[in-house]
Length: 230
Ligand SMILES: Cc1cc2nc3c(=O)[nH]c(=O)nc-3n(C[C@H](O)[C@H](O)[C@H](O)COP(=O)(O)O)c2cc1C
Image 1 (cartoon, rainbow, N blue to C red):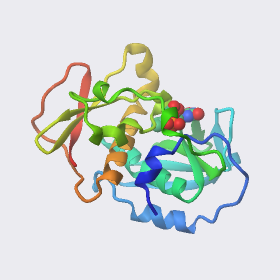
Image 2 (cartoon, protein in one colour; image 1 turned 90 degrees about the vertical axis):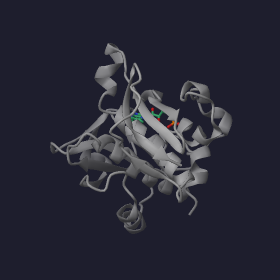
Image 3 (cartoon, rainbow, N blue to C red; image 1 turned 120 degrees about the vertical axis):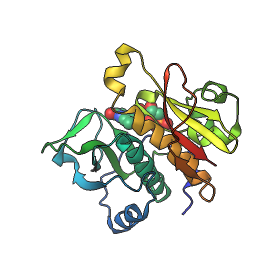
């Protein structure tokens, strides 16, 4: 199972086959994933397509519903955990797509977001087909170490992450959105940052660590999220 290689070929899957999936291996993988913050309680449920409200034009056979206790880092942590799951699914021939435009039939105050998934034969692409900001746009200077984060998926491809070099890693920031975009993205951008951190984690599993420092550089237009060593 090579999760890291999936980063360079994956895409958000919007074409699914109706095949049934045995969930046991997936559940086993999820129960072993490392979170970013051990202290935040989260859980998930698996629904079939008719059991959730979906506003996208396409449908997947299954949906992961993600729930978290409410905490400043909930969104980042959920993105971190479940992007690892998404890469795992991709590695076993199952496509997936984060779905902000969906909700539960039964309201739940801990509900965060859905992930569509299912078997697919249209879930990979060439490196040239990734539409992303340049490395110099997402960091204080260009650094190929950041390619896994650069290629991460994000809500409406907003790519809100920014990385400032430190001695042994990066301070990680989330871009503040203008007033128009803020309404849509304020719930999803922390998830996006967690997703980008998951990509850096799977590429640097042995080295990776995360902490929230008490003192860091303020950056105009950005919110400090935490610091990583990789
Ligand atoms: C938090 C989040 C929410 C998303 N919501 C939707 C959605 O509601 N509908 C959809 O079609 N794609 C959704 N996406 C997928 C993004 O549009 C996609 O990741 C982005 O355009 C980059 O494309 P890629 O994932 O194929 O690299 C979402 C992605 C993230 C990370």
